Image (cartoon, rainbow, N blue to C red; front, side):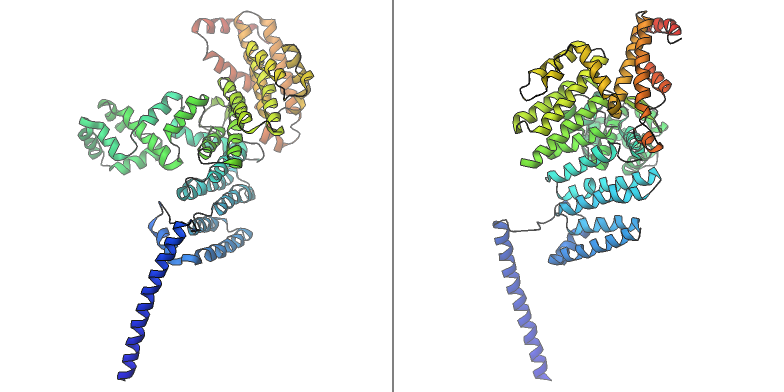
Length: 524
């Protein structure tokens, strides 16, 4: 019995010695791996405690468990157990947080494969959002310097939401506009500047209140709210309650409070840094973050800071493509905050798009696809600028295109400006994109209203007639309900009414009176 106890004691001592030696060897091995950059999975930063503990405990078995969860996820998809896929995807990303390929694939799977299984657009939008959040809120938390993740996130906005490939694309665009409108309102340049200057934390906000801090704390006490509860209610309602607004205005604290709560909402929930957004707007021109192309540009711009070689080109391409979309349809013409909106060209971005293309060509050479994209942009820009009345700028763009040595088919562009625009419209009317058709029709309607104001009713009817012709030819292509839902335009009279509302907002009251008197003779 004594011999047995002695043997057990010796075994325990030996095990402790061996564990100590293993620990020493393991520590030295880790030092060597770190020194020579041989660590495949680096220590996690910003990880929740449970994730950090799990990764340490599982060690090398994390990959095996992630593979098992991948197989289980595929099985759930085949059996249409979609909601369990969300939790499984989160687990996989947490188990292999630096395996960004897994996060990209899982996000793409949700946004593209799973979403289209559902018929209801609100269900599809929920899955597109799951894909966005998996990258934005999870994977980027561990891989803030990975350009691929930024590009993949930008692609979801640019392609899945911004393009017309999905039957529910209109719903996505409206849902995004409604969601962002609650946070930023009109989101004009001055608002972004205010957001960018607001305090970045609760402590900084309270410190900025200075002598009014006690009054603010008393307001919270009167409303029986904590600071976090006030933040929760603000985000749920999109603003403060009427009583809190009244008290904040009495204390002259409404502006600083509203800006702080919106800026923190943008940073914490959408990972949009108002200071960076403001810098991007200052660089390129006004971008409406209620529209998807502004988000795709933002994330590509983020990725550009960390990219090299091929990823650098991909991020730059996404930037000029997003800018081009913002130029052709990046201004909200009509948005009622519910289920309908129309866009029109944001002409002020024209030079920024051109500069972005030229910058890429100067840095990376004139590859065929970049030249083709630039050429298509200039053609669209000339037509849009011309139809919106900016003839000199349109002529300058056309001349510059002719002078580029990389452009081979110069005969197409060596025409008088009006003749070129008419020829292009005649040739392309059957192949127009939604954005080009919409912008051309809107510009012609706008020129009709401008003509009315200078008493040229016959000229106004001419522009109106041409707009109707293009509208009818474009809509004739919408052979079925799917095409109408994806790429159709509102009724012509609705377009006219929205352009009239927009035009009236740009002219003085004296001109409005002329318009009201003369419009009675229009289109009789």
